[in-house]
Amino acid sequence: MLTVALMEQAPGDVTVGREMTIKLDDRNRPEPDLRLTTAGYDGDCTRFAPHEVRLVIEVVSPTSAHRDRTVKLRKYAEAGIPHYWCVEDESGAPVVHVYELDESTGVYAPAGIFRGTLERPAPFEVSLDLDKLTPPRENQESISTKSARETRRDQTRQGPTPSDPHDDQ
Image 1 (tube, rainbow, N blue to C red):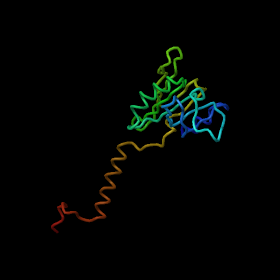
Image 2: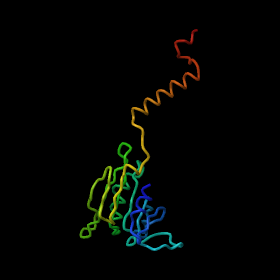
Image 3: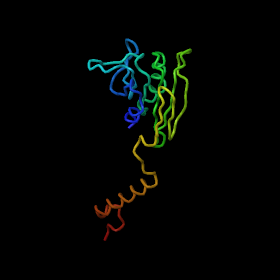
Image 4: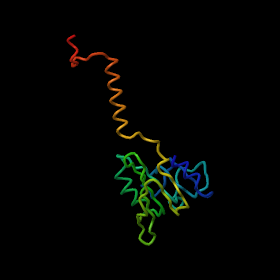
């Protein structure tokens, strides 16, 4: 859903895509979850150069959290990629940590933490309703109630269990 939302708002010279590496140097070729590039289409292309990439987006998971928040943050900045977003889950809702490259220092500066709505002037004018990017979730109370109801239904279908007080009847 994020891919589509960005495609709808990206200027004509920007391509939104996934599953393509960025050659940061001879030993580092990460494959971000999403990337926005200015490179024209080339069917033989297997990677992008950092100067062709305007924005990298990583969706943080428990197994990638350290790499996405620290290692990739540093490496993308060192390569000169101007914008970096980390999308995280906060109680079922997306939160986007936005970074912008400070060209004078060569490191990313935090540009905001966005919940609900993300509006930014760069890398292009973008406005995202973050709550529409994920499927609606049931609240925990209804999940617990539903789970308890399903457990009772399953027990009724199976009949008495050895620990059932009516077992002696």
